[in-house]
Length: 56
Image 1: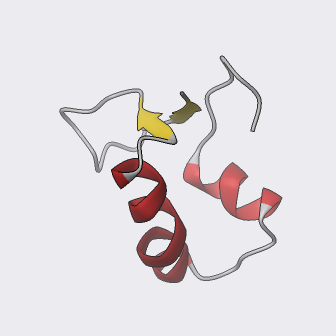
Image 2: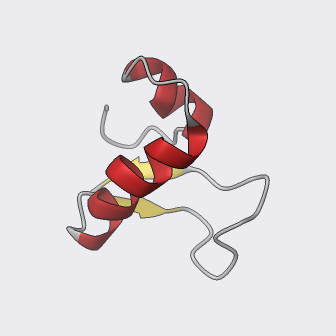
């Protein structure tokens, strides 16, 4: 990931060459958020279709 570039979950899955959305969320995204490696652009709406993730 590049700094100051917002990525969709699909873009992140492509970068990691993953196909399972649920597996990606459970095994990668959840932990990255907990460790503050990435943050949501719309934190009050985590399920928004416009949600993006940005590197801290």
